[in-house]
Amino acid sequence: MSREPSLSEAGAERLTEIPAGEIVLRDEGTKTNWRVEVGAFRLAPYPVTRALYQAVCGAVPVSTAGPRTPVTEVSWPDALRFCNLLSQAEGLEPCYSMGQDPDAQDVVCDAEAGGYRLPTEAEWEYACRAGTSGVRYGELDDIAWYRGNSGGEVHEVATKAPNAWGLYDMIGNVWEWCWDVYDPQVYGPYRVFRGGGADDWPRGCRASCRRKSHPTFRVDDLGFRLARSGSRG
Image (cartoon, rainbow, N blue to C red):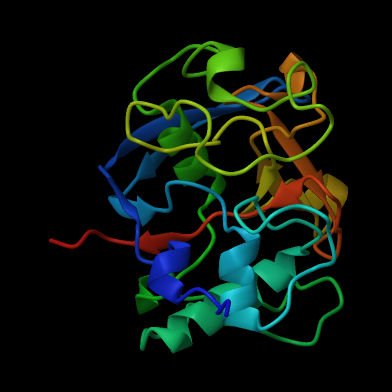
């Protein structure tokens, strides 16, 4: 008889320690760079899977994909609610206070609460690069599922080579929601996602590539990855 996987079995507790440092972000549209200091934090080694989402939420978006593939068809608020539910399930204080605004502009994040959250855009790129400075942290076919090798489908997590910090699927497989607003003066509430997906060409699968959409956006190549502030000490 089959059973639901426990949270630890599904990978909730396996977070990787990321050391403090700094990252220079770049927006190609405006040709601007900005430097961000990144404190020590923890990041999941791969995106949230359908198995973990099912274990925490009791349901998962309909798909023919297997349980160890990244969950997709989740909006930005869906990802935040998941973080809060998982935090509560593990006895941690949730980071997010959710409001009623349809544009999700009334969400408040207490990153120091101790619970699970989305990474910031700076944290995401800093962790993706893992000390490298090139277009990506390895040869594309070795590290990523993308249009050239995916068959147009997402694949199980951690089946390509990780980066130097042991993080899988930072490039390819699915895009990943981040906390940040993309450019509020131009795009209003649109939020950032990073990383490239299984149906993207190489140009979309770069450490610096930035995409965005409305927080309610759901699509079959967009998921998310868990973070927590600080280190275990």
